[in-house]
Image (cartoon, rainbow, N blue to C red; front, side):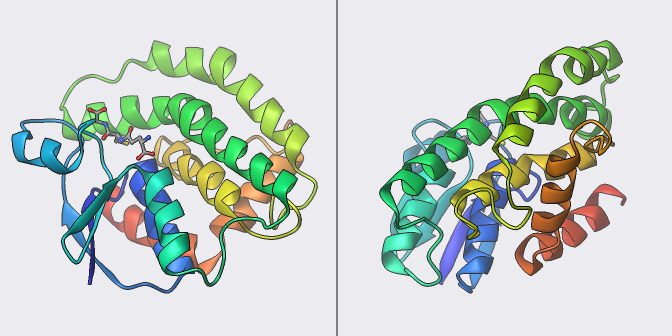
Length: 213
Ligand SMILES: N[C@@H](CCC(=O)N[C@@H](CS)C(=O)NCC(=O)O)C(=O)O
């Protein structure tokens, strides 16, 4: 049985959970918070980050590496395009999502949910407004420019790129924000379509039950 170390609200843990659901692979969740004392955890995650996947004593950290590994062990359904150019574009969009989309879109979530409910600190609403007015719009502009089909950003077929892009938009929602459909119509439809897939929908419902307490 696969074990997944991490916590559900992490966009990177969610990436792996969606991939496991798409591949119909059962797993057990091992709760590990992203910060705090973790000498033991560093042995299986040298960068100290979640998620880590464990299977038959083998451990592998990093959502991108984990999903690439799962693609080799459990190839169907494939989460990577076969066309070489589409494959490269999908990997870059995954990287863009992990680096830029996750970083910017989690600001409202971190301030309004993590600080308020977990760290028991006052949210910094000025930081949220700065993100919403200055940092996030260029990211949404870029994504809007990439979408031609609401079902899949590359080649008309759901892939790792869709998993990586749609995941931090769940955190955006937990931060009480959504895509303004009058400004980014293709992106708003795309995010809603990907979030309606059974793999995402089940996790979103589970997470909302937790965040709404
Ligand atoms: N590239 C990593 C990023 C994982 C990541 O940044 N996880 C965060 C939680 S959302 C974390 O564990 N942060 C703790 C830290 O940076 O020490 C992946 O794709 O898995």
